[in-house]
Amino acid sequence: MTRDGIAELPLCHEQCACTAPTATRIFDTFVGVQRHHLTHDGQHIQVFDPELTALQHQLLELLAIPANTGTPSR
View 1 (cartoon, helix red, strand yellow):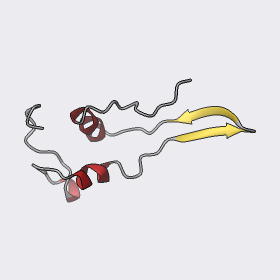
View 2 (spheres, helix red, strand yellow; view 1 turned 90 degrees about the horizontal axis):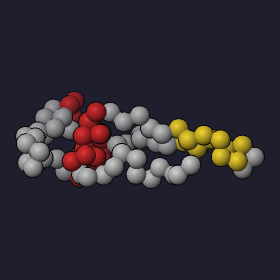
View 3 (cartoon, helix red, strand yellow; view 1 turned 180 degrees about the horizontal axis):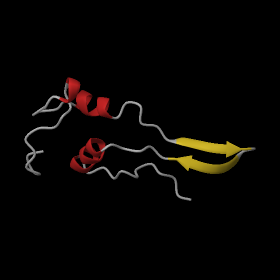
C-alpha cells in the first residue's frame, strides 16, 4: 500500500477504512468468489468466471497476483 501511495482501504466492517489490513481481512474480501465449470457427459461446455469488485481487483494488483490466475487454457 505504501509503495502505491494508498493510506487505507475499505476492508474493515461496514467498509470502514483500514490502514494496516491483516491477511484475514484480505481473505474475507474474497469469500464467496467462485468459478463454475459446466460439463455435459464429461465434455467441458463453459466456464463461468467470477465477477470481481473494484476492491478485489485493487487487492490483487497490490499483491501482484493476476486476476486470471488459475484460469484454464481453452
